Image (tube, rainbow, N blue to C red; front, top):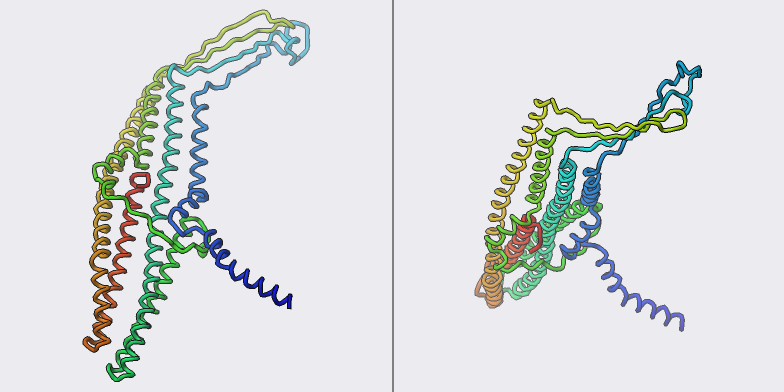
Length: 425
């Protein structure tokens, strides 16, 4: 008896624990919000991680670019055969005619080291900006795919609600048919509508799973890896934060692609300046102690200068540097024009989607709900036919679908705006 009571207690405790276990398992998967997906991608996306390593590698090249070359050491053994000294061949510095040691250091012309370091700094900045640009692009794609995933999930939930409603309408039609108040066709049409809804459910489930695969692909997870059910939608920013002039200023200041192009311009400018500075010679200085026997008897000093005679080659390099700089500036100008056009398009589309959603929520949906209630009451009293009741049901379903579609459109447009601005609104 005690054993049976213990089993019952364990079973009861396990039953109570199931919801908690289910909740923990649900929270273990990303997908309940777009923020969870973005956090997952920021930490684990391999392409983003690779670009961070590349940016770090570029940053490590800055100091070596401005450093002096390593000094050179040279040893010259004179008269190793000891000709005229009645000696034999030797490689010992103390047993040859003389040994000359030279330590030399190459010194670039004034300003070249700073310019080389400046080019490396601009390249490192460009690599860092590419990381930001890649992240904003990836984040926008995740936000857009998540909006579509939410839309499919909400449409599936709506279809289930409509299917339950059609079941209630079928029961109503069956009762009235049994009373001889309506033809059997009403009940059959309700069944046909339910069959159509079940078909829609299959398609919506397939669509939801397709967007799940898309999200997993963006997160570099296995295609069929589970995702949590979407719970909430990001709140849209107030209209005051979508002022076109303010957004245009933020675009110029923060757009990741423009930042990449600006870093490219800085690199091209410093590269051009370095090319012009190559008109001037570089130097090499050295000191050479000379050993005779076991003593240092003489010292020599050395100054070496390269002569920049290949002016045709240098002019071609300077022309190339100027062309690269012009190309970088033109590329930034084109990127700015394109970004401004896209920003205006997305802001207008977001405003339209917001207004459509507001109209559907505040006007059309309440009206459609009242129409359905009125049609159901009229059908029960025999004042309208079943077709009118079905039409009222379809109207409210379409209104809800249009509201979800407008909300998804607004979320996607918001994601595009944030991609252009390089930051969340």
